[in-house]
Amino acid sequence: MADIPAPRTIENYGYTQELRRSLGFRDLLVYGLVFMVPIAPFGIFGSVFQGSGGMVALAYALGMVAMMFTALSYAQMSRAFPMAGSVYTYAGRGIAAPVGFLAGWMILLDYVLVPGLLYLIASVAMNSLVPGVPVWLWLVGFVLLNTVVNYLGVEMTSRVNKVMLLGELIVLALFVVVGLVALAHGRGRGFHLTPLYDAHTFSWSLVFGAVSIAALSFLGFDGISMLSEENKDSTRAIGRSMVAALLLAGTLFIVQTWVASLLVTDPGALISQGDPGGTAFYDAARTAAGGWLATLTAVSTAVAWGFANSLVAQAATARLLYAMARDRQLPSFLARIHPRHRVPVNATLLTAAVSLVLGLAMAARSDGITLLSTLVNFGALTTFLVLHVSVVVHYLVRRRSRDYWRHLVAPVLGFAILAYVVVNANVAAQRLGFVWLAVGVVVLTGLIATGRRPRLAAVAAPDPDAANPDAADTVTATPAEENR
Image (cartoon, rainbow, N blue to C red; front, side, top):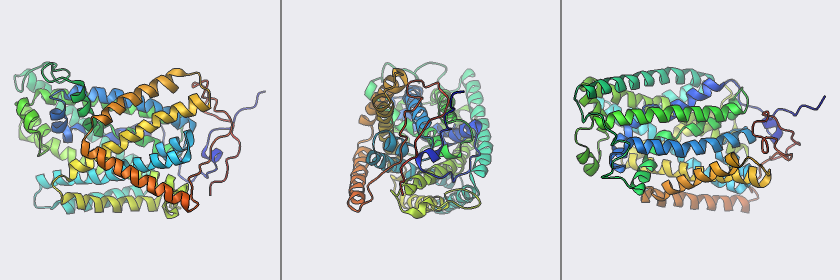
């Protein structure tokens, strides 16, 4: 009988399994959907409408295609390296440890900022509905609530996720059904295809510039990779749940923005004047059914962003900090695991503290939400570019893979689309993003100078998935080098 290869586990890479493996495919799928927020376009609809010249559905369709290539690359790298850390781990082991550090540094721009952004958006929305409660008090309440849930363990987070997802889907279904009925009865502008294509405003640079804004709604499917060490199924579950979550969320985004676009009574004014109050979607809901639907969609946005989405964002951020601290790229206290709840407790508390301080600081700025949004998008998209390069280097160059679709064509196409989006992104975001990268280079130089050069354990034996991606999720590995 032939020898059966050892299961691919984190022990093959020199680590100890510390996090609790309790999440299956359904849990991962729900986590990704909640992170992306099925009703995410509610909050940024006006900005995408203006940026796309009214072709909101097209912007989301192109965004879904771009992110699908990224999801395919995530699926490949999560099978090769089934551990927490996302692109930090994949670039560090797929290309080189210093590249992994810089990728982790750039994705920190996304993960560390996004909980604060979500708390701020939700707090502003709730303040507009209940002016007697100040923004700062809403923000403190959201942060405390989510920190307690995440502290109690990933199983508690998973249970809360399912309840919140059901609520969001009910509200979304209600809006779509009521909106379609309203359009059928002559409200809005009637049924047509201009949300998908408008010859009067179309240009590739215009639409891809809008995609860079719409990308905020898709961010979160990649957070599933942060739960690799809590996944109890095969390593394929991570990639499959990413692709499934992206397809489901993307379809919902296209449908709801198409309906909402047709309910915009004055598209020319929205394109020329923008949506400074962030109420364009709620105005469309009011056109469909009056104030009750506008209020329902506004409250749902606040709860979804301030509790459901920020809950999973905080969990993902904590696991990124944990992974980098475990590899001595961040202070070691962030790698501490709670003995009972089996969560990275210090990383969770630090994430909460940063989100609170950042949210309060940005709440005092008139452009706080816009600034944070553009920075989050830039950090995520530039990191995705590195992910695609990691697939090509790890599989095609190192492992001599013959699967040219998954390991060359798909990542190259994904890279090209995202590069075009980044080029057409907000100029201020580009400048601040590159400043953050420069700071990361300085930090990396300091680590090397002080003898803390990034070094990651890697698999020495060939990866059987390289030549045959449909092979079993196993690997024959030599003992990993000691990294501590």
